[in-house]
Structure formats: structure tokens, C-alpha cells
Image (tube, rainbow, N blue to C red; front, side):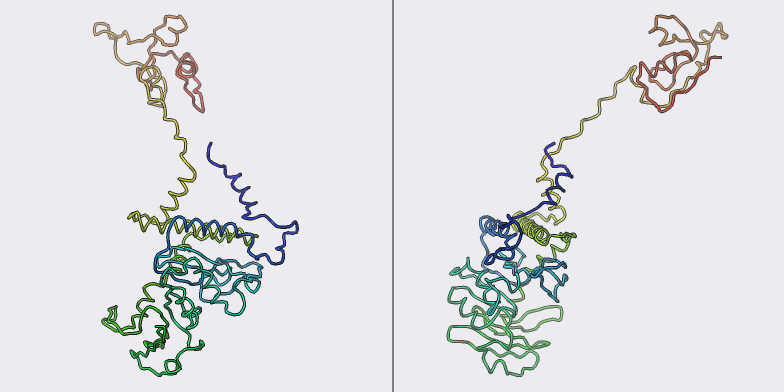
Amino acid sequence: SNTMGRDRFLAILSALHFARNPNPNRLAPSGLSPIYKLLPLLEYFHDNIKNVHEAGKVLCIDESVAPWRGQLKARQHMAGKSHKYGMKLYMLTEPDGLVHRFIIYAGAADREVAGTGHASKVVHKLMSDYVGSGRSLFMDNFYNSVDLTRELLSKKIHVTGTLRANRKHNPVDVKKAKLKEGEMIQRWSDDNINVAKWRDRREVMTVSSEFSGNLVSTSNRRGQEFKPEVVLKYNESMGGIERCDQRLSHYIATRKSVNWYKKLGLHIIEIMLLNSFTLFHRYSGDNMDLYDFRKSVIKFLIGPQPQPKPAPPLSRGDNDWHINPIHFPSTLEGSLTAKNPKKKMTKRCRQCVRNGIYKKVSTYCPGCSDNPGLCLGCFVQWHCEVQNFKTSFSPKIEIL
């Protein structure tokens, strides 16, 4: 068979590694990333998505989590996620959930992004391939600041998102303004960075180098209302991470495992599969759901399977004993001629003829297609030898 057997698959899975251990004691040397066990898989993911699909104009950054409740220094607690504990992933996606790049956060030991300016370091690393591209980046208030917006604007990357009121260099009058429901205040910097505050049920501050805080008309379930342009664009474009997490939750690979890197590696493979599904939906026009898509991928990876051999055609004649599986001897009824009604009908015994004996009998087998004549002594022999009749029991026929 061309298909891998179950036992071999489980044996490979039990020894699954994505990178070689740098030394026999399996400890990461100083200066090496704590997630070195997954670096080859990460590079493979990033290289392939760049070769397969060019990122769109609109991108968004948010956090996700790969579930893990075991002992691990890099484990994070995220109260707002369905899985509270696990490895934090900073993900760069498109609004429909297509993942282009992500960072596995290794905590304080992560020298690239940990420490002062952590959020800014994450954004710069995720957007390093898109400098000078003129793309629009949407983020929440964990990342945004006026300074970061200015830095990215100098690299021709436009930023839009919510803003925390305690960030440095926020306009003082916007920060201290007391608004009634539906009111808005905004200010512009010399380099066209907009900071606005709008009050709906609560106050929301935004920052953008692309959109203004001007109120525009929109309709929803409550009817016609006015919202700032920057809020509408933010609501339209954010949500790629939530879509990705929602789809991953249907077929999540959170099986019990003693190896954190194995579980996280399978989580990355699930993201690859989800990316394939997103691109398939976007360009094929097919409405196949995720379940059927996963099945089709599995069938393709397994390859063509040998078809079962068709059953031989049923032939008529002496081999039709299986048409009626009930074979018991019966007596011929009727007379041979009308002039002599006492002379009963008879047939030659089929098995006796095979043995060279001429013998007429009044018994036959009604279960066979041609109703062969058979004496009681030859009945079982005929079905076992000639017809290959197999049954769990052989009727005992005694000749009286």
C-alpha cells in the first residue's frame, strides 16, 4: 500500500521534532531564542505564504493564543481569550483572517521584543517586510501611540486604531474634553496625524494617519446614526484574528501532550491549513465549508486508494445454488402419464450420473435453479462437492 499505516504514523508522531537539539542536555544555549525548536517551521511558514500570496493593502495586528496549561516559562495569561493560558502569538492578518506573519512571544527571555517599548518592537518586526509599501495597518490601543504612528508614517505605513488616554504626546485638550453622547472632538498634527475622541456609550479615543474623525451617517439595527469615519473604518478592518481563532476552535489540536513545541507546531500547521481554506474561498467561488475542505485535503494527501475488486457475475446453471440458500430435498408430485396415474414422476439422480450409475428418483432439490433430481444419499455430496455449498451445518439424512 502507498498509504502510511496507523502504527507508523503514531511512531513518527511520538518522535516529532522541528529542529535539532543544539547540545545533548537539550538546553537552549545562551543567546538562542527560547523557541528555537520551532524556528525552522516558522521560517517555512513565512517563506511559503510570501511566495503564494502577496499581502493586501489592509492589514491588522492583534494577539492570539496557542493553548497550553503545562509548566512553561513563556506561558502567558490572557483573560479576554477563550483559552486563558498558553503561548501568546502576535499575528499579522488580513481582515478575512488570512495570516501573513506571527511572532511567538517567549516572555522576558525574548530579547528581540521584550522590555521597554515591547508593543512598538512587535509592530516594527511584523511590518518589516512592508516598509515603503503604503499599506494601511489597523491595531487596538495596546499598540497605538502618536509616536508609533509617526514612525510608521515615515516608512509609508498608515496606522489607524484606538488609543489609550494615558499615552505620551496625546493632545491635552482632547484628553481632558468632557463629551456628551454623540459628540466628537479631534485635532491634527503638522504631519497629518489625527487624534479624536468620540462618545457613544463611553468615550473612545482614536489615532490615524489616514482617516479623520468627521462624523458620517451610517445605519444599523437601531436606525440611522452618525459615527466618526475612523471608527467605521476600524470596525470594518479589524477582526481578522477573531475570524482565525473562531475557525481554529472548530477543529482545535489541543490534545494532551508532554511537549509544548509539539502542540504549538501542530497549531501552526492548523493555521497553514486555515490559510489554504481562506485563499480557496477567496478565489474559487466555491462555498465548500471547512469540514469538507479538510476532508478533501486529507484525501489528497493520502492519495488514490485501491478500489475493491468487484464480485464475480452470477452465472446461471449448475452454480446457481446461491440464488436460494435454502436447500432441502422435496418429492416430485404428479403422475408420469394420464393413463397410468399410479406411476409417479421421476428424475435421474444428477450425482449418480456423475458416478456412472443410472438411477431414477422421485426426490429433487427445489433450491437449485434447474431443480436437479437427487437421491437422499447423494443430496449432501452434490451440494458440497459439485456446487461448493458451504454452510455451518450439514443436514443429517438417514435412508430408511
